[in-house]
Amino acid sequence: MRDGRTSGAGQHQLSPGPRLLLNPIACDARGLCIELLPELISADPWGYPIIGPGPVPQQLLPLARRAVAACPTLALMLAGPAR
Amino acid sequence: MSPHGCGLPSAERPVAPAPGELRLILRDRPLSLAEHIDQYGPLSAGQLEPKALIADVERSGLTGRGGGAFPASRKIRAVAQAGRGTVIVANGSESEPASSKDGVLLSHAPHLVLDGIAVCARAVGATRAYLSVGQGAASIAQFLTEAVAERNQFRLDEVPVEVITTAGGYLSGQENALVSALNGNAPLPTFVPPRPADRGVHRHPTLVLNVETLAHIALIARFGGGWFRTTGTPGAPGSALVTVTGAVDRPGVREIPLGTALGEVLQRSGLNQPAQAVLTGGYFGTWLPLPAALAVRVSDEGMRAAGAALGPGVLAVLPEGACGLAETARIASFLAAESAGQCGPCRNGLPALADALNWIALGRPGPDIVGWVQQLAELVTGRGACHLPDGTAGLVRSALTVFAADLRAHATAGPCEQSAGPPILPVPARSAQ
Image 1 (cartoon, rainbow over the protein chains, first blue to last red):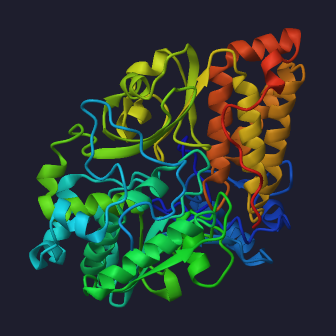
Image 2 (cartoon, rainbow over the protein chains, first blue to last red):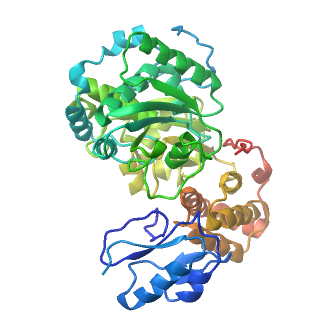
Image 3 (cartoon, each protein chain N blue to C red):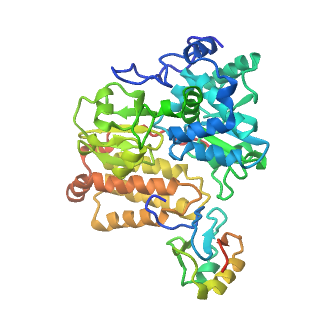
């Protein structure tokens, strides 16, 4: 990305712990992930999720897994090394 | 294939070289196969040896000339190691409206590109090879098909090249969109991963290289990576094709040593009037102010140091007196309309961004709307499957910086006289998708 901002779209970064990865084509702004994981995911003005930068902190992993499982369009993924 | 004329569009020709200008891959007229071999010599079996070829491309430091500037050797090696039955795609779709370099290259040095395909096909063990051109280029497709047929008569290529025409649209030249089209799907960007090098055309590892990149590889195969580095700079070796447009007397496609000063390139293109800015890298590029940027080196390295990118090599000069905000608003509207609409932030954010910028250009912008534009640019960045939102945001951000004085003038006095004037930079009518 031009400004180095972390994004869910197609960015693989090697660092400890899994990251949330969003397929923006599959995402339909259903908003479940935003409800389930407000610590890491916020809504843009159109209701689409903005994923916070960096790996998912250890204590949020269960919630992150729940958010991934809840996504009705399978747009949200956890990618990278599991801890 | 007839060696001359060929019924090609005459508007897009290379410009006559000024003294000291390069003619490594660019020719002044279309070369027939016989003339091509006469000029460059045939490819020998030794020059096709995969390991040596990849090592030579690595030594050359050649980077992709389609806009990404990714090391070509790494792309080739990734596909070479990915397995059997690979596919090679030469990307000549050139959907960037301000660029004509790929079309000029294909119409004047088709056999260099086809040699590059042959060399790379051997290097990655390809069993299929495609050469894509844009939809508007029907005569070029015919011309290239004839060139391929002539080569096949002499069995020059182990893998026969299939010339294909991609549906129009700004995104049709994007690597994943091209692979998607070859898979029989809509010519739209796809979510990555998988990358084409891992799973591309019909699920085979696929090497996608820009046609100019392939032409350079054809010469590197013949003369070596060390030879390639004798042009350009250590950090940006070789030559590159650039398209110079806008307020210059001799617009057109030039071949320059990478690292040439922007001022020198523009001077050779006949910059004979005061100019306020140059749009670099294409429509999702970056404005650089003139004359401040005249010393910027035209290379990916040099452009990056200036906060821009060489991209596919577009340099579009905006004359003094034109309204940079209105030009940018028009381009932003074009880019917003070209959004495939697949990703929410792009589908919603780009039209909002273009609307806000049009309001700035044609209305009387207060501080709120400038803040909104900056917020929108931030919001869309990095949130699409392709780089269209990032590119549009970057273009708009650079406009707010470079045309800051115009922004203040518009805010106090309303739109300038030039805002509604004829555009300097061409924005095509929206293509069907």
